[in-house]
Image 1 (spheres, one colour):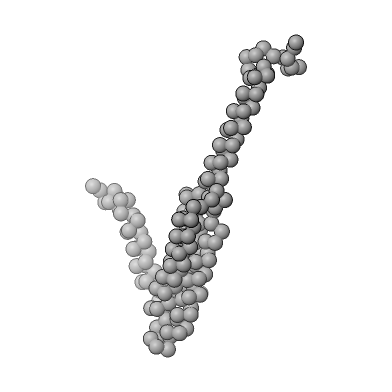
Image 2 (tube, helix red, strand yellow):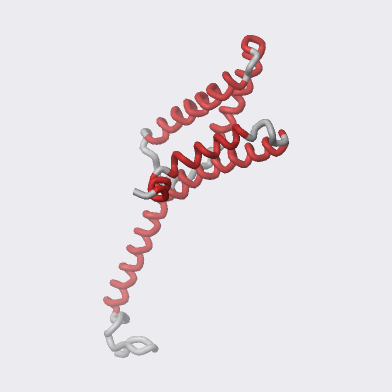
Length: 164
């Protein structure tokens, strides 16, 4: 197996690891404002990708996607404010606490939604399936009615309608 084939096979691990390594190596050299902007881009990009996975790939309309992001951020700030005097380093406690609280809130609500017999309004794929099924039923009914009245294809009818 060639180097490019191995790189392509393990690209999901290699490229994020290289990116993290470069970010850590350049952390002391970058302007703090540019680091803040780049971090914001990455965070909002991840939020956009998660919405793409949930709505675009799964077909589930998500109106509260960023609620868990906000809950995690709020909880992380509360933890960092309260634990800063005890440890001196707020990032060690704030990041895992924020991620854990956001994940627990999402898991609790997800359990309720997915095991409470979701209706057709929460799922865009089910709505589109029911609309597609209704449209096909209506078109089949229209074809049957047209063939029963003699106005369908091959009945020999003229444009003006059926002649007695």
